[in-house]
Amino acid sequence: MKALALKNRARAAAEVLLFISLLIAAVLIAADKRYSDTVLSGIMLWAAAVLPSLFPYFFITAALSSLSVTEKLAAKLSPFTRKVFNTGGITGYAFLMSLISGYPLGAKLVADLKENGLITRAESVRAAAFCSTSSPMFMISSVGGIMFKSAEFGLCLFLCHLLSAFAVGFIFSFYKRGEHPKACPPCGSPAGRAGPGKNTDGIMFEAAFSAVFSVLKVGGLITLFYLFTEILYNIGVLSAPVRLITLIAGDENAAKGITFGLFECTKGLKWLSSCGANAFTLSAAAGICGFGGLSVIFQSLACLKKAQIPSAPFFAAKALACAVNVLVAVPAGIIFL
Image (cartoon, rainbow, N blue to C red):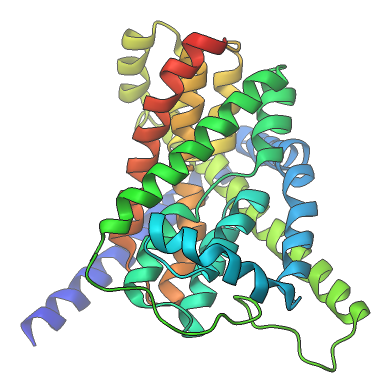
């Protein structure tokens, strides 16, 4: 009873804090016109750098999830995922879709697997650790080509990201190692295979609807975190870490990129790109993409919590992914850039 009462008090205190924070933000936004421009900048950044890289893949993965071919794919991947990740073959499908589409689709697919009873709770924690990746189109085209003006930089960033995902997945395979993957035949898809009455037109329409809804939700969260990061910096909350990192990195723009990237990945990468493509910016960008920023983490946690997948291990996995990405990118940047 005491534990429940403490939990309720903590929840009530968190709600009060959130209410006060949002009220202060609303006053600041209303009093300062520049925040309207910040919102517009966030929307434009999403439209220019994120929308083109995410929308096609959201559509493709939504359509693929309705096809029975995923059964065969899961069966083929099962020996590999069991040996490397300690998970069933169907999580390999979620991993591939996460690699193709990027955040936060992997977390959504893992949550669907858990809710449909296709994986155990321990498996869901392991899978969430490696099924949380950025997409190759975002890193190679948007980050490398558009932001850093170097496709080679983007390709190197993606390869570091891919290697780190395998490393983090292997490390998390030891999470509750004694609990083995669920021995059950794979379903046609994580979200439920299309029924026999659903034709190709129906699959395409639902995939398009799902893609539009998903990409708009991502855009909204990116814009909100873009705005809140600017507010926190202007009121001095982020000034201290920016000054500290500036002393270490020797560049204020790089410091802002790293600091902002912890909150919103795209904004951080945009600031970081002003420093050019080099070994330092590669390692910093890899760390930002590995962590994903609080914006991406909250998007993923919204899916995972719905399936009752614990948040703490996932947050630990993202912190580990950040560190591993940096460690992998340091020698890669020295060799290739």
